[in-house]
View 1: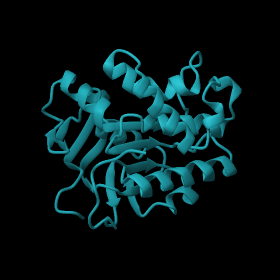
View 2: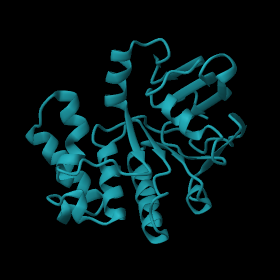
View 3: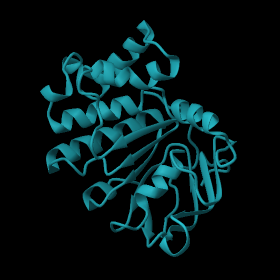
Amino acid sequence: MSAQPLMSARGLEKTFGEGEASAKVLHGIDLDLAPGELAALIGPSGSGKSTLLTILGTLLKPSAGTHHMLGVDLTGASEAERTRFRNRNLGFVFQFHHLLPDLTALENVMMPAAADAGRETAAMRERAAELLDAVGLADRRDYRPSAMSGGQRQRVAVARALMNRPALVLADEPTGNLDRQSADQVMALIAKINEATGCCFLISTHDEHISARCRRKIELLDGSLVGQGQSTISSASSGAGA
């Protein structure tokens, strides 16, 4: 592990509900991610993978513990600070692509930057077009999601996650809704982007074919880390961009 982790979590706990109805989902998670990692988050359904990703993505606050990224204390940050940090430093890919149906592929890819700036610009359109080219969809830039296959829609979602040049992309079962060929294509794309840009990817998956292509496996069981291997990244730039 590099001397300066990209992300560091210590003692993360999460409890939903109160009193007798409460359920503790995470139990004291300690986890570091280095710049440039390609890591799989594995474990059975109900093990807490999605909850951990949601906390690491600043979309949910832990009940206890600390969460730092790029030197910023995210557990102590205000909601506005967390939102600003998330927009500028994190990317997300979900099992269901969550593309906006009335927007073209280009417009969907631009969305994170346009939402952050409050408007679209020529530079954003150029960046989005470059990303669609990078994921092999230059000829689909003006297509709406309904006119694309599942694998194509998920590649648009990967491009969208990279729009703001995030240091970390969190992917929650990104191939879970795809056939084997499409899943392999999306994973090959993620591995290529990781290698080319130094963007760190943490991928939650049940698919052994997908986790086998990651350089590190982090295993959750009943809300506790039972194995996390070691980073194979000795030194990498924390900058990211395609």
